[in-house]
Image (cartoon, rainbow, N blue to C red; front, top):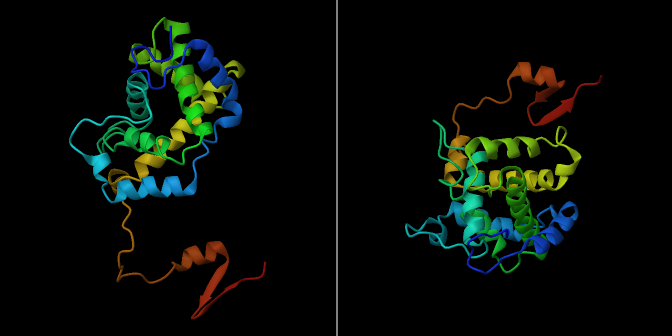
Length: 222
C-alpha cells in the first residue's frame, strides 16, 4: 500500500518514505509559512485571483490527485456547509493550501508536514479499516478524526496525527476566513462609517475600571 494510491507520480511516497517524513512531524508542524506567503494568499482570495476562482476544474500544483481528494474531504469535516455559509471547499480552501505550498517561497518543512500528515491519515485508516481515508465510511473517518482532534484526550501513540490535524485545522480556518465567504460568515463590515457610535457604554467602562474624559483616558486607581 502506498501513501498516494492512484496518484500522478509528482509527489508519490511509499510507506518507508512516508514514515521518514512522519518522524519529522513533531519538529515540522509549525507549517513554516512566511508572512509574505500568507499575505499573498489572502490577497489573492480577497481580490478574486482568477487562478483560484476560475470556473474550470482546478488542477493542483503541489498536491497529487490522491492527496487532493483527501484534502478536499478533510477540510469539509472541519468547516462543513451550514445554513449560514458554504463549506471549506465552497470557499476554495484546498486551492488556498495548494497556492501556499506550491509557492516558490514554500519551505521543505511545510511540504513535508503536509505530505507526511496526509500519509499518516491514510495509514491509520488502513491499519484500522483496511481502507484509505477517502475510501473509509463517514463513521470510520469520524472515529479517526475524533481520536486526534482533541490533544489533551488523545492517546500518546497518536501524537503524529494530533500534531498534523491541529496544524491542518488552523490552516483550514485561515483559508476560510481569508475568503469572501469567510468574512461574510463572521459579518465583518470593514471600515464602514457608523454615524450612531457614541463611544464605549458607561457600564463597560465601569467594568473595566476606566473613565473617559474628553481627549484622555485615565485608569482609576485600585
